[in-house]
Image (spheres, rainbow, N blue to C red):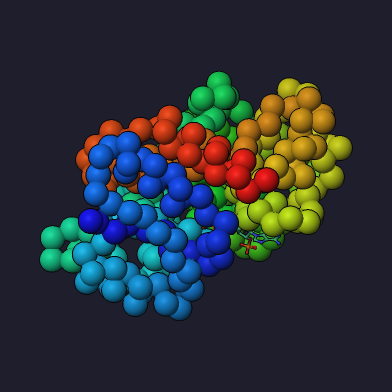
Length: 272
Ligand code: ATR
């Protein structure tokens, strides 16, 4: 039995275990996938432990994706290095710990499924953490014009500069929303019940696209987008596609995407 898992903090909300266990079952693999609460400070020890115990692979989530790159024990592949964040870990020969990133491809596939065209679109990306970095990298490759807004405006400036865009603080959000074709929330705001909207949802209009990477509940942002007649995309398919790509890295098998999507949607229904 191979052990897989996800490290993060908080981690209770994660549907990755339900999704990956369903995939392993469908593929007839002797494997199980658990969620582990791991803080930034403990990431290095936890990775060394997982390697020593022969884990098959890991996902990393908030707040570990960028921290992983600071560790000498982890070697990022080219994509993770370029993005500046790791969401997938594989273990090679001699307990070699390799960092990958599947978030950007996952987000891109989710937008493609919804027939969103990115080329020459003005995209407002809110957030500058690990997930935002991966999405920014994909947006750049697709030829989008990128505006990055983040609570920590310096981080927004840095991320924007790395993808040829412009950086802002959250106080500029109102006017940025008005001038954008596509608005992406890549922060954790909206994950918790009672989280406020990042900006006044009444600024949204028909014809805009709103993509919120939060998947565990319908956020105030997506509610406002639907009310305004904008296209609203939640984080479910990004979760599914990034997980599918992680599984393909670990096993070399083709991921059963539909099984994974059903497991996530059933898991969400059970929680409601
Ligand atoms: P992930 O790996 O999922 O991207 P992360 O790297 O911890 O997680 O990034 C979280 C993002 O959510 C960051 O952009 C963070 O803003 P800061 O860089 O200013 O910390 C953003 N975020 C978290 N809580 C927030 C809040 N209450 N208001 C606004 N932004 C928030």
